[in-house]
Structures are given as structure tokens and as C-alpha cells.
Image 1 (cartoon, rainbow, N blue to C red):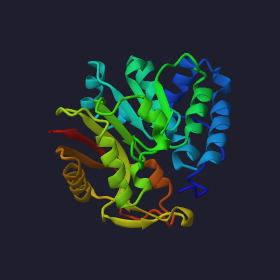
Image 2: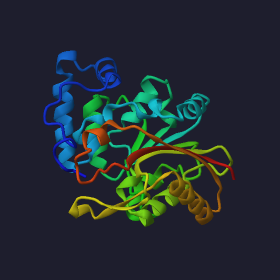
Image 3: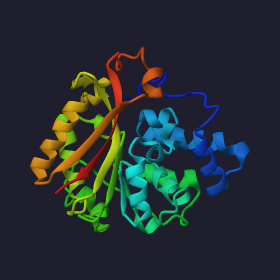
Length: 278
């Protein structure tokens, strides 16, 4: 999904307002230098892996606060819940929760398949060693006990997380790998009812397998019905049960790429919030 054009903004004139506020008032980046600073980090990250959110500089959106289900998530965090961002990129969501919502970094955890993104996050926000959130490299598709997840396992958060965010990640895989990732994420959630797994993913009115750029193969796009059935299967595989809320939402990225061969008239974004029942 590293296709050039609307997936990558060669010229960046502005960024999300909350991103500018964070960089100026939390990170101390002078206002006149913010865009140059962001583009410099963006270009380094795009060479690591060309995710559209990096190319489009949309990673500076405070996604959790804008979620349809924010009213279920933020009050829980304000009452002392633990939070895990799976596929965290630069760790921007942890900074937003700490800066805007005053969530203690001691309760904020994150991992990404590309540890270099986490290092670039410290450069982006100029907060090493100030920021004390827990961020490590990790592979969502691999068992926690696997060698590539040694740092993640060392956090000792299996069965200890109240809110898990997996934003714009699951759609990178086919159905089987999505299932594998979701099963692994469930292992981090607290065993008692009330734990949440939330996020968004690219979907379609017509569920099925869709092509990605040749080097990436294909991925599975859910509709609302298939996504709820997917979580029923996740529950069966993990001996858990989940109440699944999901809705189609508008997406500027989809609108900007409506002429791309990877977008059609049925393409949508899905926001979701899954609450553990048992």
C-alpha cells in the first residue's frame, strides 16, 4: 500500500491541529519549524515501510479521541485502566493520552513490528527520556513466547490490559492472519468482563479478499456482518465471548484515492469496539 500519489503527500502544507499543538507545546518544536520537522521524520519512516498513514502524514491525528466509541474508552482510562496500542507506529496515541487526557505513562503500553518507528517517535516528539510510556518491538502474528517477542513478553502484560487499540492494522493481512493477530491480542486482555479491543480497519460493503500491491499479496476486507462473525470465531478459538459494535465511517484517504485500483465504490472504513462478556 505504498503506492505514490494520494498515498504520499510530496508537499505538506499543514498537519492535524492537535498534532501541531502537541509538537509545539509538549515537544517544544518552534511553530515555524513544525512542518519541516514532521516531514523530515516522515520521510525517514517512509523508507522503513511505506504505510499510507505515514505518507499522508495522517499519523498525527488523535484517532482515539475521534472514534465513534470514545465515550466508552476514555472514561475507563480516566478511572485507572491500562492501555495497549498494538501497531503503535511512533507511539503518538500514547503521547496524546498522556498530554491531553493526563493518563499516567505507567499505564500506557505499545508495540510495533518496526522498532525503528518507536525510535523515530522519540525524535518526532523530542521526549526521550522524559516520556516513560512502555514501548517495544513486537510481532502481532507470532506467539508471545517467540524470540521476536522477547521485549514484549518482558513487559509482563499478558492478561493485564483493560483497553487494547489496534488502529489501521488488521486490514494489512488476509483473513487467516487477521484471525491469528486477534487471538494473540485477546491474550493481553484481562480475563474478567469489560475489557475492550477497539480500532479501525479498511473494509468493504462486499466482504472478501482484495489485491494489494504485488509485493504485499492480498488482504481481507470485512463488512459489518463478516466482522461480527470474525469476532465470534475469535471468541470460539479463545474460549471468550465478545459484544461487537462496528460501523462504517467516512474516510478522507478513501475519497482522495477513489481513482486508485485499490479502491472501489464499495470501499469503506470500519470503526469497532469489542467488549469482553466472558
